[in-house]
Image (cartoon, rainbow, N blue to C red; front, side, top):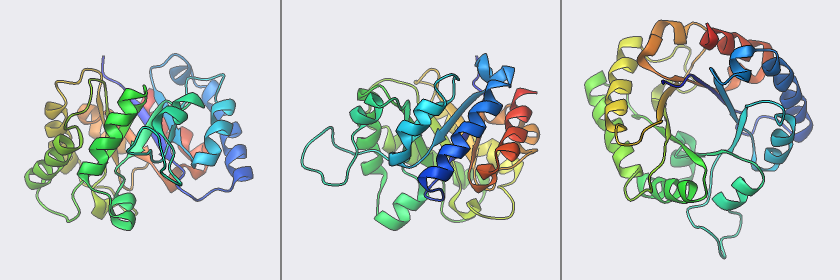
Length: 245
């Protein structure tokens, strides 16, 4: 059965108090949405590392999953400032975001780094949330080739297990409008074909995602990955309700 997913990254926009308030509000709204509570719509949120335990507590009465915005490429050791996949799992996280465009641009991360993080996550029982996407606007067919190459490189040597791929064309992140529906369909279709050997995997779209996009894309994607739009819990629920319809 295909998955229906709504994900949210809070990046580093919220302090701890504001994040806790947001968790409580979203947990209350989510608990009143039958499609969330029965698993028909999967919801996940990736707060800052320090906010993960508070998020886990807030969402404990719901199926909403919590993840880290990054994860260490090593299992353990003298890696100052890093957070291991096993510790994320220990505090209740269920997934780890890997390879976001900002990590690549600001910190020089590449597909080889992503591959190590994917492997560590799967070994620890976390579902990788792998972010990929072309940097420059180009034809859907060329974008699909770039995305599939990134995917294959990032899964090289990874253990078996499902993966959520967040297709986020870099040129669409923070843009007024998302990539065109036909563009997304072509790229998402190619990614799904490349994931055929990993049952249960999903492809979601991120990059100026907002209400109406899921309806327009239909079954072309398994969900959406939201950013600042979801800072308003009521706005987030618009998308969750759309996914449930």
